[in-house]
Figure 1 (cartoon, rainbow, N blue to C red):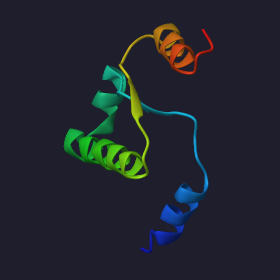
Figure 2: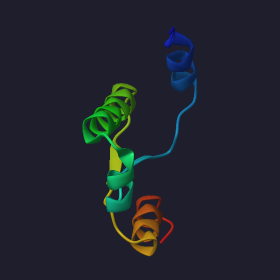
Figure 3: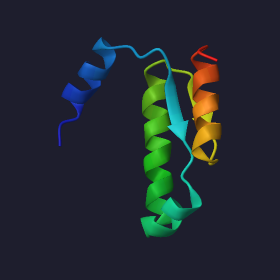
Figure 4: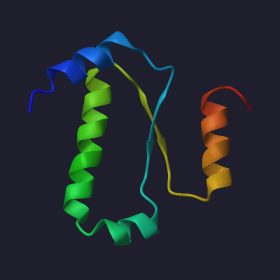
Length: 77
């Protein structure tokens, strides 16, 4: 699979912020294979870091707490 078009597209658009959400316990149980899920998460982090982004990690927490963390990061709160 040629991923170069996706890389080129990612370089042509910039996001204000990039958030990486920790998986919730329920999602962890449903994933089936933690090792694969961890590799995917690491690949996403490497990709965005490689594009020059500082990733903001959002911990596993209730939705209102996650929402507050996002709003604070975006300076909307």
